[in-house]
Length: 320
Image (cartoon, rainbow, N blue to C red; front, side, top):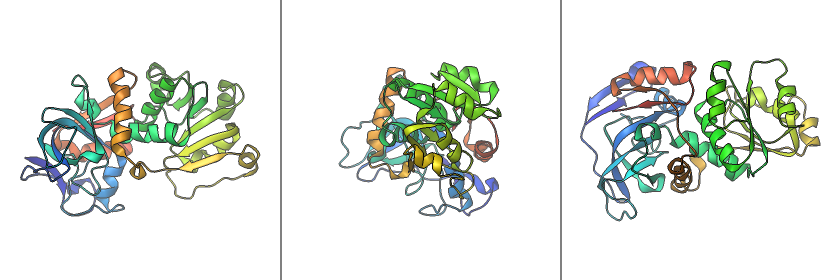
């Protein structure tokens, strides 16, 4: 089979397409014919070396969707021909930038046969992160006011849909060119994140403040979050550009009993369970991954450049 691999750490130029043996499933694994492999920033961290892969040469790709073509010993609940989605496979197992990948079933879920498996290739990190943040950590409830920073991003556009499906009042931020599309995903209010009066606009849109915040840039927005929060607001942080994260004025946070949770998708107790939940939303039509661009295996370097540098709505997906 053909697979994208890097034999050493470095820039996108270290990615190359190799002809290698198709994997066989170990016990507890299935082999998936890859229809879509989501491109995530974390894929680039393993490639450039800030995160260490389990071996070299390494096949990148945390997310996968496709068809089961082989089943390993002891596997239950999966059969050849099943449509599946998976995530969390590109750190301690070979990833999904390949024609086939062996995936442990503890990070895999079956979806309906009619699901678009190219789009589902971008589901894992985005939707599981959003689900864990909003439902598991923030305990989002119907009629809560939810602020989703960056509603056009991979996690953001999934979070808008998940929050809307719970019955929350959804406020989000995005560049003006994406406002109509993000509103169609279920956002009640979409605001330009560059506007000078953003805090006032969020507070007004929330009728005085917000109850839940999903923050992907804690270094930029943590103090902002405290300023727009209602009493007891739950803030879940999923990332930052600068690791120096803090409050410039703690009184707003203390005065509102602000609850701040920092999370990583890789700490999810059961990826399979989370995938089943978001997969159910996909099956029911409440969650759809928007694909901004697809790339062949030979274009993996360009895909990894674009995921860090370009502006787009939704996800980038590699289609072997």
